[in-house]
Amino acid sequence: MSTDAHVIVNLDVPGPVISRHLYGHFAEHLGRGIYGGFWVGEDSPLPHSDGLRLDVIEALKALQVPNLRWPGGCFADEYHWRDGIGPRDERPRVVNSHWGDIVETNHFGTHEFMALCELLGADAYVNGNLGSGTVQEMSEWVEYLTRADDSPMARLRRENGRDEPWHVPFWGLGNEAWGCGGNMTPEHYAQEARRYATFCREHSGNRLTRVAAGAADDDLRWTRALMESLSCLGCQKDPTNVFQAISFHYYTHAGEGIQTSPARGFSDDEFHRTMRGALDIDRIIAAHTAVMDAYDPKGAVALVCDEWGTWWRAEEGTNPGFLEQQNTLRDALVASIHFDAFHRHAARLRMANIAQTLNVLQAMLHTSDDGGLVLTPTYHVFEMNKGHQDATSLPLHVLASPTVSVDGDEFPAISISASTTGAAALVSLSNLSADAALPVRVELRGRAARIGRARILTGDSADSTNTVDDPARVAPVPFDAGIESGALVATLPPHSFATIELDLG
Image 1 (cartoon, rainbow, N blue to C red):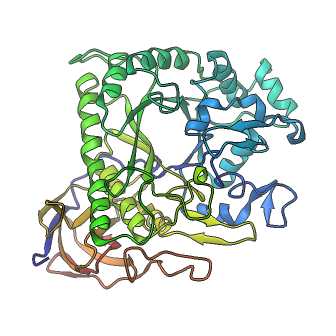
Image 2 (tube, rainbow, N blue to C red):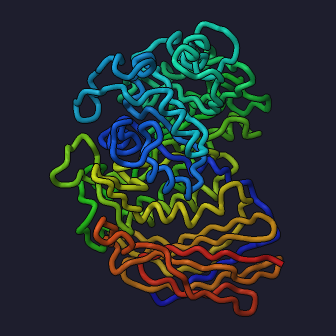
Image 3 (cartoon, rainbow, N blue to C red):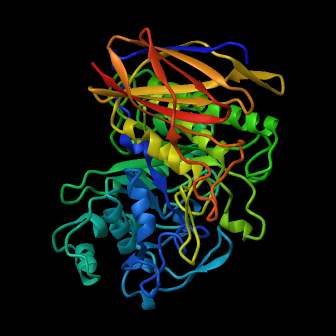
């Protein structure tokens, strides 16, 4: 790469607010995500709070987790919530047919999940069972969780030890209805979503954002069918307020499909194909947004990406159905690219959930039963970027950038976004080249600025990772950045992510 990256950031031109919920998480009954991850049980020698592992909770609290999605995923559409309440030793065992074909004890259920959310300070995003459940079952779960008086479900909750209702702001109407959630057509699911949403009542002042399950990737048929069920093309009237958001899922891989290539030991070309795949999230969000804008020009209905991340082959020696994979600097850069796109599209995209939080796919943390706890490279991107949560996005213009070539395609070597909280700004920068440094000049227009703190995340190679024996191999360190003639100047080493905090005058 012979050209420097040249970017303009307008510090005095506010864009849409970056909802903190774009930094949401996902915990499914899958592999060691719940059992052996969050839940160690009340008899565990590890420090815990009523069975919830405390070092995990403390590590995640540093990320300011805004919301947590549960119980799935594909598991949600075979989960019957009454199996997970009452005395644990009396709860029925069932088969988790989607993930490993193992027996599910139901020891972690509604009360345990809500206790976890309270410990994390996170809002609950509960995904209801539309695939194999009933409207009544879903309706009664909402009542059980959120109603304050002496209704039948409120009384049942009190019998199980919880007097006051919980605050549950987000409710999923099934999951991946095009596949594991029922193999439905978009039009059929749209009618089902309207029916289920109608009976997900708002009790005792609890306001629900009902999230209709939408597309895989850029299958716009789903978004169009769901929007048509709420409004008409080109109408200026507000959409019918049946559900308030539409989701989509997008997983990144190295070009041959999910679950096909290893998490480590990849070539530079495979690294660059992964970066190219991650960058495509911008096009996909824009496509769904364009469809929604045609039916909802005022932006009443939110777009939600409630599953995203990398999906590699499972680690050797683990159950393939548990989806355990190593987490490298490559994964961290996939996360940074996604957040830059999320920030650009914050006007319509208002929630997202990394898949997943612990021990599964692109996890924040890897744990072991003997007390081991590893912060992954992806964890550090979330931590370094947390200043964007609920900040105001700033418009920027990439005037020039070196490019990276792979398979005859070219893409910019730089990914960047910025936001402000008024007295400060945060700039996030990524170098997407596997082997070349990236000199960057960012013109800071509209306000005076000085550097408060600059940090960088990088490693010896793009497949650098953290382990129990070497837990800080990939961790943020101070970064040499400066301001010259009103411009932020820095040189990013290959495969690196940096954040620069600015104090504004």
